[in-house]
Length: 257
Image (cartoon, rainbow, N blue to C red; front, top):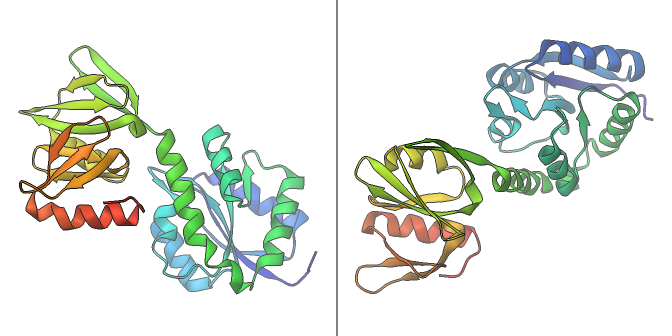
């Protein structure tokens, strides 16, 4: 392994984890110099700007936010990343899918050494930088496909997969959910509440009465003022103010209009 010093940061919201990684690096990877540690996004961003690290050990879950909330703050990511995660099957599958280095807690020495070795070989290799944005999107898409949301009904909470929600319709102070299975569920919160909740999961408010999952749009109809043909055959309204945004979103998803 190259013994040239590698400037690194440890970003993890658990103090014990930060300390453990620091100790392991000091003992087994002395070439990795820990310039600083952070337990939240703001401090992490400051340290990255200050120290210009070559390697960052980054916990995938930082409180209520994820590592990608930090990475998205940088137009250019010019450091290597070793992700850290607790035992989470979904996260591990996503890391494998995106082909990135990760460490499971508690940290295994051999895997730490291997991850550091891999990162050392990539430092300064500009040809891999273009893949970071794609990797981030792959990971988020994978995680989004596994997410569930609790819907408040008259009898309790119904846990459903977000990816199976086709669209939601306003029903006064309630919201009607329509699913890929054909099931309908009336929920005791208004549509605005669920717009705020689902907007980061490929949903868009196409009209003041409709919130749609872009994945289930079959076609945009340009007649009669415009509407959406969903995959179950339902026509949903599109407001004039939302039409351009909707078409741009669908183009970004590489779906046909």
